[in-house]
Image (cartoon, rainbow over all chains, first blue to last red; front, top):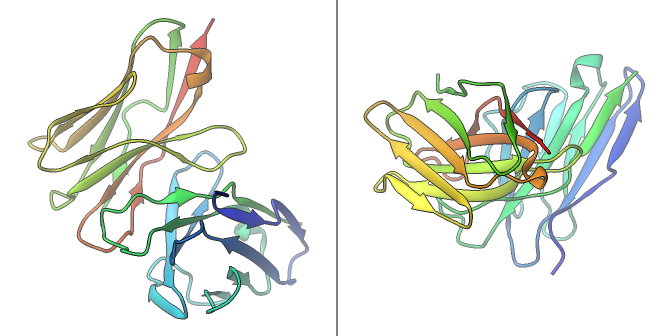
Length: 116
Length: 112
């Protein structure tokens, strides 16, 4: 049973380009969460999605960032017109179908985005 | 706003000693807590959790203590091993689906 998968593991972009980060949840999980981690800091919640729905995007910057979790395929975190401050590790987590607020979240290995 | 903070950013222990990592949280409504371990270049890994109706929970070599009166959480690791070297985060959740708030982390160095 594969865990949460993220790709790419490392992504380098120049300022102004777009970054697309992908997350495939664990089998049987329909809830996906994205977190951002700056060096030497904890993870900061960005967005919580279920299939085809954004449940909570209160941690997502209002501009340039978007997320989706389509009916088929992985969840995508998209960052348009990247800036150096977007450089961070982006982690995806998934939880089971119940989605209860005390469900354990399983984390992927992360995508490390570097903006030159 | 809510915040989760740690008292010690770095902790060094000798192999075989016990380790205690502390965490303070600010939201008295938090009802679920998780300790995560993060090794370099990897995602957080679940260690142990505790709900607010408990004050202690034990796992294999790990114990989590919750003191709701002072809003304090601790992780105790018995007979610390080199493989325990990592950054440890506490995370809290309060009645808001699965939005977890993470502390800034404590780095545990285990000296052989």
